[in-house]
Image (cartoon, rainbow, N blue to C red; front, side):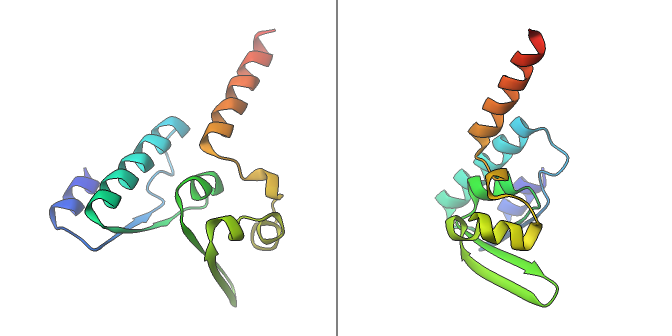
Length: 115
C-alpha cells in the first residue's frame, strides 16, 4: 500500500528502509521484483536499506557499506567479494547467494528431512 502511495507522487527517488524485513523469502522476492520492474519502467532511483545480503546481491546495482569511521561505495559484484564481506560483516563470502540458491537450499533441506 505504501508503495502505491509513493508512486502516486511521481518520485525521482524511492527510499525503502528494511521494507522486506518481516516477510518470508518468497514474498521478499515478489516485492523486490515488483519494485524493480515498476521503478525501472518509470525511471525511479531506488535506495533500499537492507541487512539481507541475499537481497542486496540479487537486486542492487551499487552498494554503500557504512560502518563507524568508514564507508565504501562500489558495484554490487565488487562489494560482495568475500574479503569485503568479512571486513564489514565478519561473514564468509559464500554466505551471499542469489534468491534461486536460497530456494534450492531450502528445498534440499526439506528433502533431507523427509528421508
